[in-house]
Amino acid sequence: MTKKTKKQIIELIIIFGIVLWAVFNYKIFLDLVGFCFKLLMPVIVGLAIAFIINVPMKQIERKIFKIDKRKHKKIIRVVSLIISLLLIFGILGLIMFLVIPELISAVSTISKSIPTSFDWLNDLTSKLEDIYPSMEKYIGKIDVKSIINTSLTQAGSIVSVVVGFLGSMISRIVTFFFGFILSIYILLDKENLVRQVKKLIMALFGNKVTKKIVEIVKLSNVTFTNFISGQCLDAVLIATLLFITLSIFKYPYALIISVLFAVTALVPYIGAFIALVVGVLLIAVTSPIMAIWYVVIFFVLQQIDENFTYPRIVGKSVGLPALWTLVAALIGGSVYGFLGMIISIPLSSVLYSLLRDYVNWKLNNKQKD
Image (cartoon, rainbow, N blue to C red; front, side):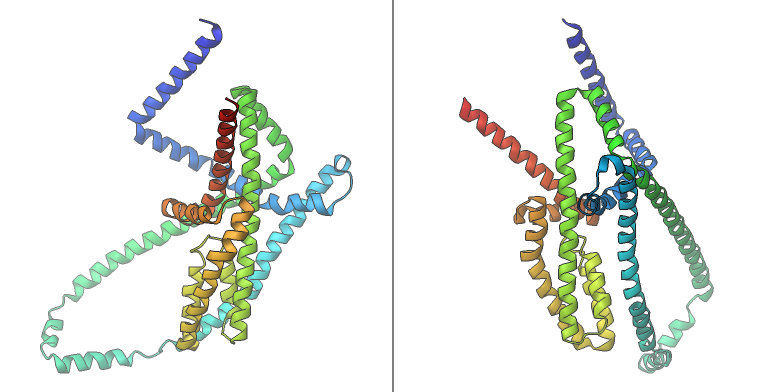
């Protein structure tokens, strides 16, 4: 038995032992995985933010700057990063600038439409007492002290829930802040980081495995980048069509509903239904009949998006057939909610490409045989 064979056997025994321990101690293993995931969350958030910012930054570096990148690489990188951040924050700021005034106006209109007097409640109580005289007897038996004590107990629970929610929100904001700072460092030195990770993988797994991992990572990068671009293009296109339609029929709050539609449409297929509910509530304050027709307009546009626009723009951009795009979104949503729907389509595209290449490779080998 050679030294290499002995080493491989020892590695297999160690791996089998770890798997066996994880199976018999799955609770401890899951807690350990959860702890590591929580510990690495700023890094994960940083990588996700870096990936998103890298989409426009890469295009700016390639298409805007035509000077020699070897001599001015650092300057180009910094300037491209600044332009990308200004572009992203500028779009977010523009959305807030357009939406917030209309949102304030909508809240003001809704608050004015809510009855300021609750005399109708007293009238209803009086009518019920006239119809059911025995009700007064039952009302007198109500233990008001017990109700107050129960209410105070429930109020304490509500306060604890609110405090917990605020604590969770602060924790997420801090995580996002550190992730954002980390993403800046990642983007400024991404080539060096990629080279170091590649060298580490090569040291652990060898050249053959490293080459395959690099191919999968490159394919994933292209697929996810195309998916983000296609998703944003589809959302803007349908939202613009919705805004034009609502403006033609002189609907109130056309801008805020369209912007909300564009933002929520980033969640594939069902995300835009949030805009449906909010739109119905806003329009119904002005005209219930217009709210009903808004539902009709929404479903017509949604059918156009789901059956024609989305599968062709997003499905084509990720190289996934329209049918499998819909299936991937449905499965991802059922497994992991909105986030699952967003990730499932590009992930399915990567798996689809790998499976297609494997099938073609197997068929070519069979033909040779």
